[in-house]
Every structure is written in structure tokens, then in C-alpha cells.
Image (cartoon, rainbow, N blue to C red):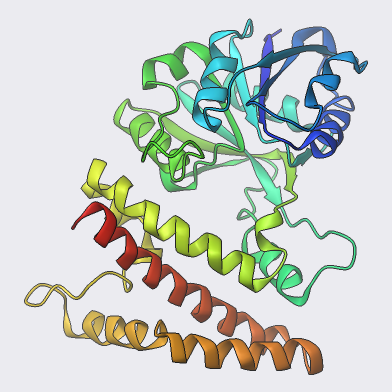
Length: 324
């Protein structure tokens, strides 16, 4: 029976962390073969009280000065006793077969990076944006037997890897030295690919992300803008990765003499749509629709174009910050 170490980095989310641990307490996988390592990244909300809670599994609490999620995950891995590591974020919820499903994938398919299937999570009284975008953010259905996926689908909030493999790949790395580790999942996935690993999504390991970043359009747009800015740091580290991320294909500057005419037209359209007047106009239309006629058929493309506009803005900011 595989000994599993579940590593959860956390920062000032005591209540969310407690709910996450409650779902882990319902696992069908034997609890005497599970340890949960909570790495507190300098919280100030009393998170240390979690060490006094009773759970059917072994709970280990580690506290470190605030260094960011990459350092927290690495600290958990370095202190883990299990041969299989599962990384979860403190805002995740998992179904009872989550751990068992990931363990089975590693038994059937050696030399893989595992992930669960992310289902849409809707909080009470969700906004029209959350109701629509939660489904867009969910995983593609892997089916009951699971499926191999591309390295760009690697996510650090829901990931499993053999401990020795994690160390071989080089653990988690802070792409831009910013602490929160933007694009750390793609960075890890790409390094794993170069080490010969494949990526496997379990159809039995079901999970849900209580993502505060999609509570409304303004919050999601701000996050998209920052993510696009930080992506430039990733592309400086691995220029070849950019071709694997379709979200940037029509949002980068025009490469005259290299881009085909059709792509140039798309980039010009994106450039216009990402201007402040265009974004303001689309946001006004969205505001009216959300209050008067919240039709997904109308809102979904508007949401995509607005967020795409902020991605364009963020990418241009990243070029100015990090250089072309």
C-alpha cells in the first residue's frame, strides 16, 4: 500500500483550509497510509490552531516565514514521508475517491504526473459571471478510465507525483521571483516533459476549486492582466513554451514578415478590442445584460473578449517590464 503525503500550502485562509481538510477526512483510501502536511506561509489569522484539530489521518503542521507558494510546497515535499506526493491548495474540495483515484493512476502508469478532474464549483448566490465561467474553467472530461493530457494542463493546486521524481524534476520554481509563483504550474510541467514524464488526468479523482478569482468579471480581468504580464517572464526562461499556449497566439505584437495575413488581422482586431474605450464599452454592455438579460449565449463571448483584452494589456506591460 502506497504511503501518500498530501501537501497543502496556506496563507491566511484558516476557514477554507479547514473545509478542505474535512473533505480529505472522508477519503476511501486507508487513513493509516496518509499524512497531510500543512505548510503555513506566515499566516496572521490564527492558522496555527489547525494543529489542534482532530482528523482520522496524521496531520503535520509546518510554519515558515512568508516566502510564497513554491517555497511552501518544496518545504512540504522535503519533510514528506510518503513515496507519492499530492499537492492541493487550501481552497480545494475533493470527493471521497480523490486520493484512491490518483494512487491507481500511478500504479497503472509509471513515470507520470497525475491530476484530478476539476468540476465546476458554484458558491451560494453566484454572480452571472461565476455561473458561466466556472464551467469554462473546469477540466475536460477524462472519462472513468482517465486520459493523457498536454503538459500545459498541469496545475499545482491539484497534482500528484512520486517524491523521487519531484526532486529529479527540480521541485517547484518561482518563475519571476515574485513569491506567488505565477505560471509555476506550466514551468513545472515543461521541466517534467523534458525529463520524459507524461501527464495523466484521473476520471475518478474529482475535485472542486473555490476560486475567488472568478467571483466577478472585474476580479477575473485583473487576474488575467497580471498573469499575462508574468507570462513574459516565463517566455524569457523558455521561449519555446509560448507556442504551446494558444491564449497568446493573437495577443502578442505583430511580427511583420513572419505572421500570416490572417493572424495579422486577428492581432489587429485584438489590439483594437483591448483599447480602453473598447473595453469600457463592452463592460457597459455586460453590466446591462447581467442585470436585465443574463443570457449565457450573449455574455460568454463578451466575457472572453473582455478578458482577452486585459490579457493583451498585461502582455504589453510584461514586455515593458521584462523586455522583449
